[in-house]
Each structure stands twice: as C-alpha cells, then as structure tokens.
Length: 214
Ligand SMILES: O=C(NC/C=C/[C@H]1O[C@@H](n2cnc(C(F)(F)F)c2)[C@H](O)[C@@H]1O)c1cc([N+](=O)[O-])cc(O)c1O
Ligand SMILES: [Mg+2]
Image (cartoon, rainbow, N blue to C red):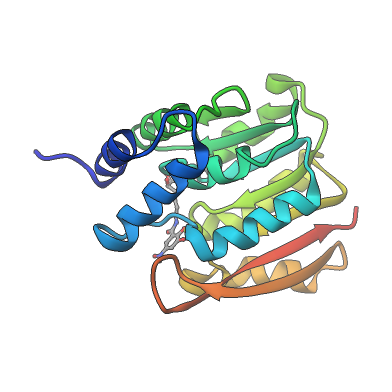
C-alpha cells in the first residue's frame, strides 16, 4: 500500500513550493505533472486562458466543480479581489484533504470554501448554507457526464444571473458533447470556444466560455 498520486503531488508541493506563494505552488504542480507523473490539472496552457477570464470577469462569487488536488482552485483564488470567495466542490474525501493542504500551502484558505460531497446534494444547499445570491463565474471541471445536469441544476436553483460566466474544461478531450451542444444551441447562452492543449500533452483540448443571458 504505497502513496496515491495526489499524495505524491502534495509532498512535492510541500517540499518544493514556498509557503504562502501561490505561484510557486502552481509551478511546482506543473513541473511535477509534466516531468514526473501526469495528472488531470487544467495545467499551464489552459491555465493562462482561465487566468485571463477570471481577471476580465472580476468575480465576487466563484463556484468550482471538481477540486481534485486544488490546482485550479489556487489558480483562481490567487486572482480574486479582496472579499471575493471561491466555493469548490469535491466528492472524494481523499482528494479534498489533499486539496485543503495544497490551498493552505498557497496561503489562500481564507478565500476558499471547500465542500465535500456530491454536487446534486450540495448545489441546492448553497444559497442558505453560504448566504450566496448568484455566482459570477463557474469553473466546470468534474465528471464530464455531470457538466450538463449540474448546469441545469444551477439554473433551476437560481444561482445564475444575466452575465454569469460558465467556463468548462475538456470540451474536446475527454469531451462533454451533450453540454457543448446545449450551451451552443440554447438561446439562454452566448458561447465561445478557446482552443488550447490537453494539460502537459500535445493533444488538442479547449475551454468553452458560456455567458448566461438570463
Ligand atoms: O476526467 C477528468 N476529470 C474528472 C474530474 C473529476 C474530479 O471531480 C471530482 N468531482 C466529481 N463530482 C464532483 C462534484 F462537484 F460534482 F461533486 C466533484 C472528482 O472526485 C474528481 O476529483 C479529466 C480527464 C482528463 N483526461 O485527459 O483524461 C483531463 C482532464 O482535464 C479532466 O478534468
Ligand atoms: Mg479537466
């Protein structure tokens, strides 16, 4: 019974990244996952697109579906204005524990609310649990078959407003065809594809940015 990949990523961060320095945590994970062990982080190339969209959106409330080791959590949280909050949902308790320690190493625990559980249960509880009105930005990077049902759940729970931005990872590889068809054909969304590459590989992938029109 050895360690797990997330544990090995965390150990590398704790050994090589400077405590309180989010950029060093991000580059440590990218270095480990490009040279030692691949892992499903959004990565450095798609990460630059994610950064640009966070900065242009200037969100007060962000939701992330799929924390995993906390790589994109740190990428997003480091760019938030004071007072803004990132709620991230992870259903695997082991991954959530690793992510908690990665986020702490980056010194960003004050900006992040990490919830452990399933989206179908947690999303309907968000308004009362966290006194949230609406999300300004949603980063979707969990199970690809859950992208569409969870987007519909966010609509039904009144957690999106006119102008809310959905940003979905992996719309090419592994792909989320039903989600892509929905946001590209629904009159309620203005959708745009950002071509890039699958993390740490020379394979096409991309992000889809979809603005909810209300
Ligand atoms: O499968 C991929 N990602 C799945 C990601 C899954 C992650 O999202 C969590 N989750 C599941 N439900 C919830 C919620 F929030 F609903 F509770 C959270 C899972 O526990 C896991 O940590 C993937 C695969 C590849 N690839 O190249 O194979 C590349 C990528 O970038 C990927 O994201
Ligand atoms: Mg992904």
